[in-house]
Length: 311
Image (cartoon, rainbow, N blue to C red; front, side, top):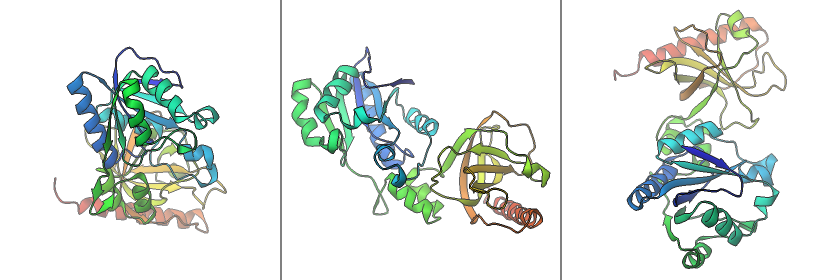
């Protein structure tokens, strides 16, 4: 998959394009990407997705921006898995925020990406002051020589599949509902980093994934599966949060204790699927109390996997 950046992309092959933040690459995104790829292959176009970094709401209202469902690596993996061959990342800054919608169409979509087909969601808005919409794109289509399609919303049990719906489900500890919208368990991926080794001292060594953003879509202690360390996912228990017993005002961290597994994982990229929530984060009076609770969490996770139906 080719990845480009900036506001002046240059391509040599005509493209079929879709545009969005694609946070979480949920079932609504997947349906649109699947349709785009089918159209692109039928017309011998390159299937291309435009996304933004950072999220526009992080630019305009950073204190009130929603928690991200996925980091950029996970987003790109999701787009690639759906058959997207080219992702163009527009840095959302002052220049892009104030670019008129007509300029965005001509400069980025038509001249930059050689767009011959565009597929957008039914609520898509773009350009300065969100002035661009389906009607404007349709009015410009004959001038610039592209055709246009709109993707209707995808609903799951009567509820629209959206990044907001996934966040709401996670905030309510409804991992099952989030999975329905995503098409798979909610997951976090990253490269295992060195920690303070406290888990090892307590008898529960952990693989640590630093979380770069302070706002999380969920926190607590979870039963998880870890992918990327072998042919099959490995059972584990994980803590996602700020570790109030041992830290003050700490950066969020995902700590994963693998059950019946002990190896050097530093530098490995792993994917952590969240299966069930055990409890919220708590602050304990001392490390002894914390250790006893971790042992109870490990026992609960073992019970969870022991009672799973046979595959």
